Image (cartoon, rainbow, N blue to C red; front, side):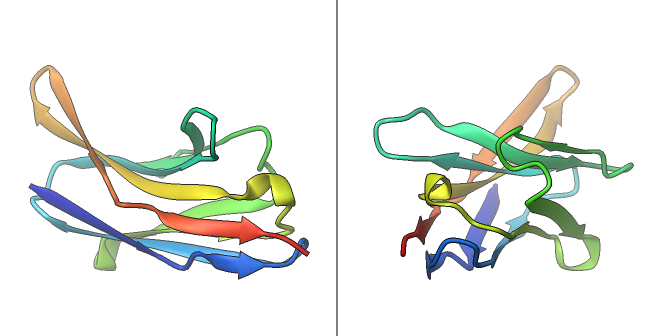
Length: 121
């Protein structure tokens, strides 16, 4: 089993910055990728950013490119999402995601409970 605990959300003004953190624990020896998703009211959950191992390939949604940066602290099994130049459109619940190899042909997904990000003047 894998546990993901997010932190760092809050209420900020447009143009401000936040850094989200996600700490992974449990059976994480087969961790392949981690990422951040977000879901706004009435909308589908969407991928914000992801990072893979061992080569740390990153991917970003077009809406956040140039503003958000995902990074990983391997020693602490933690992934971060640095969010700069926040916009009201970024308001959502942000969820940490981890993908683990569960077998030869299976990848298991794990989710955190989410952290609220609100951007409002």
